[in-house]
Length: 416
Ligand code: 7TS
Image 1 (cartoon, protein in one colour):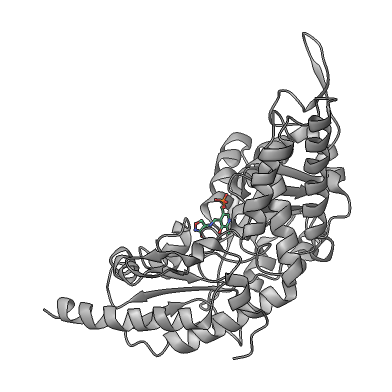
Image 2: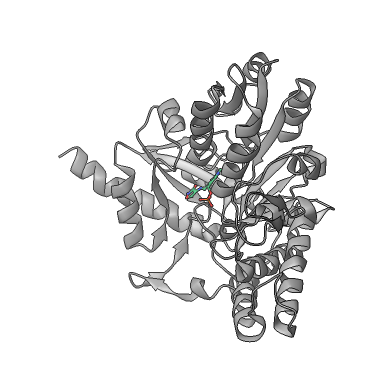
């Protein structure tokens, strides 16, 4: 198999991959939930706390200045990673969920009115549904969902039909965390802009796995999480077009986000600090910078090619497991990221996941925070294997063999 990355070499950078689970080497196939962390990220966070720790944007002393410089350097690096030349558009938040809420409660609450429409798709994660429901209730706007094709791709004709004069914002996942579908976000942006709507791209499953460039996509907002891209938990980012953010009122008030405070009113700091109230997660931002540096060292084209190859192989291998039903667009004919979702016979995915765990295989089981999509699939839940830079094709073989054993076991149980 042609491999774009030297995966064995990469694995040496991830200490957790040396551990055993139930007496066997860990087979970690749950990177869509969260990724593991390389030494470089662990060391960057550790070094920050050992050598530089101080609050940012406040102190004039050496540590304070070094911490501020490191935090702002991390911002510029993360902004460049997603193709944003101007770091003023890059706001550090906790995760994708917070980034989307910032747009919903900031921009949308201030700009939507009764009759306006928020256009979503049937494959969204709950974090790209629920904030819009709350804001729709508050503003009188309504939610409209683009349908999926039987393959689990966006129904383009339905998108064009539902995008209209009333559409104010389109919020769409770049990559589905369940089906692995890669959505044509650049085409979505040009259509939406023609209709006068802004576009938020949920990049939680794309920014870690493929080259993402906000300029090339043409989106207005991009949300992503550090913990899914080799970085620490508790740090993520919202990128927004600076001209839109300039016109948006802050969401949280407090230290850092102000220019001047009077007893009865305040004026706001400049971008991006206007949206970063209180002491930020400086160590997290520095860890995320180290993650970005690590990914750039591998090359995002190579990362994407590696995962495409793994998902093509996973389909080919898992399709040979009798009784396994696989969902989502089939690679390589269809554009598909490193996520494979399936069910075995009528076995509950939680039971399946427990059996796989006995063999040290970690997959996710459940509704994957995408209940509307589960209803579309007409199943209560699924099991999901997801891949990253450290995933070996041999681990897909181990998964397939464990599934074959599970099928043996359950077919006896199910048939009595
Ligand atoms: N959007 C998508 C497409 C996601 O996959 C996730 C997390 C989120 C948003 C939310 O990210 P968070 O960092 O704010 O939690 N997805 C998953 C998953 O698939 N399994 O666990 C979390």
